[in-house]
Length: 393
Image 1 (cartoon, rainbow, N blue to C red):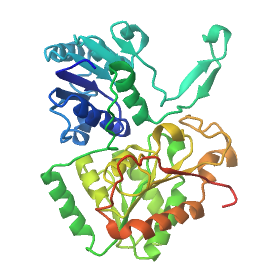
Image 2: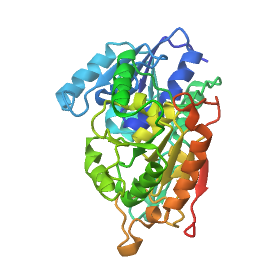
Image 3: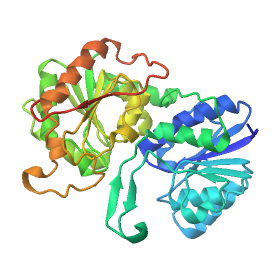
């Protein structure tokens, strides 16, 4: 295995995707203990990685701000070149990330790439965790296309880059990892103490998602929250500013909407504070979303529902978690807006019932609620339990 002294890893994707790249950082440190390892990520997601103990530096790009123009982007590429990396690993197959890798000036460039930029790579491999659209027209050049969901978890796909491109055999997969500063942990603790007593067991609700087809029905979330409140559990709503309306709609459908055990943190926390707050929860009930993967990194037990999402590529990466998969034959479609009308619209989520979900919520609470904040993680045990819902449940 060739020795490298100055390594750059590129991942400019979203919250969940960045969390799913963290096992690569640990494995690189295990194989190159003396190397300087840098991660290039989106500036707005810096909380996720700035305290990662396997890194020497985070290089941050402001994708939607000061670096979002061609002159600024060229200037940023020059900044990367001045770092004199001898190895660049690209874990994000889009034009921006591919260009940054291709023009980095590194002696070895590997990973995922768009075709034009791949000419500058030492070795390129496909990412089997993401969906592929295979042409069915003449020579596979024209639509219609066949949707083929990813067939390997994104963590495993990223680790394959290290194996196939660099010849790394020693894989140190510690699962998803995120650390927060003492200051962020203290702020989260203060917020927690202002809202919940020490003896309250709290269930985190993350009901938003980037696609409508990833969102479970808000009235179903409301029923789950009511059941938990009836038993004396606290319910904490999380999510970003874009989720505030759906959280309000959900709470509006609850019979216990006036309960003082309901707390709304939606749009009010930094990513670091979110992580620290999730760590204190007894369980997380969530859509397929970025915060789900943050929760996994903090060891909180997860129950999640997958409708349009392909299970193999993005399941919660912890064996104690439960994923309830849609019973619909169109799962997983990977479509952002459901094409069906009437009762069939979002049938993939409608047919994952409250009774089915709460069965596993109660099961995990019975097992883990007394360990909230200190739930043990088993090294190497990352395949979650996948349950296929049935319409009769």
